[in-house]
Image (cartoon, rainbow, N blue to C red):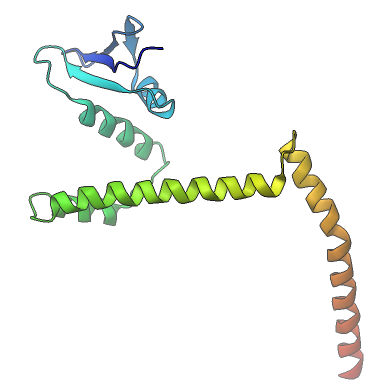
Length: 157
C-alpha cells in the first residue's frame, strides 16, 4: 500500500475533488478520511496553497452545528482572545499535548475494560453474565435493607 499523502483539490466553486479516487467528495467524506487515519492534504486548485486546516475547521464547524458540540462558547471565546497573544503558540502546543494525553488515557481505559470482559467472543453476553452474577448480591442487599427498614419503623411508631 502506498504511504503517499492523498491530495484533494478545492475548486473555486467550493467543491472538493479527491485525486486518489477521481471524483468529488463531501465534507462528510473528508471526515471519514480523518476517522480512517488516511493522510491527506487539501490544496487550493488555483494557487496550490495548502488549505487543509481550513477544511478541517469546516468539518468541525459542521459537527458543532449538528448538535454534537465539543467546544463551549466560553472555550471558543478564550481561544479567539488568544489570537495575536504572545502565548498563542504555547496554547497550540498545549492543546496538542493535552489531546495526545487524553487519547492515551482513553486507550488505557478501553484496554482495561477489554481485560475485564476477557477475550469474550460476544462482549454483550459477557456483560449480561456479569450482571446475572450480581443479581443475587443485589437481592441479598435489598432484602437486608428492607428487613432493617421494617425493624426501624416498628420500633419508632
